[in-house]
Amino acid sequence: MAEVVGLVAAVVQLINVTEKTISYIESVKDASQDRLRVGREASGLLPLLHDLKSEVSVNGDEEWSRCVRSLALEHGPIDQLREALEQLAEKLKPRTGFKGTLRAFVWTLDKAYTQEILGKIERVKTRVILALQGDTL
Image 1 (cartoon, rainbow, N blue to C red):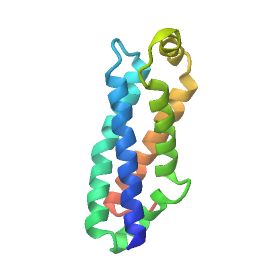
Image 2: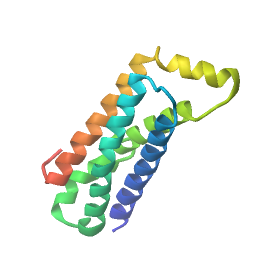
Image 3: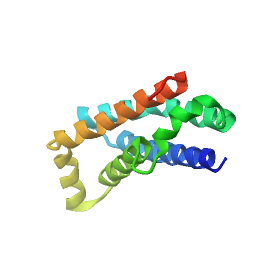
């Protein structure tokens, strides 16, 4: 039972940081295409995370949940994405003054970071879809 509670808590944390990141992205006027793409991908992840949370809450002790457990391992996919989105949220956090303006411009130059975030979102989405379908990971 404790394992189920831990998994639900990990998913809830990821939902919260994803919503915060999306909020920061949406608050930027004339956001770059990279920011918009990250926002769209993160928005697409939210319904899957809510479904996962519901399924684990209701059916957490059932057989299919074994394939879900690897998602919430320490330093596993959920932890990695949560950490990446927390870092992204910190970068996107509204700031004022020169540093805030500079951060807005630097974002467009950091394509590798954007691709890394998008890759993590896509990997977690794929694994959550497989878990919800009851397939092995």
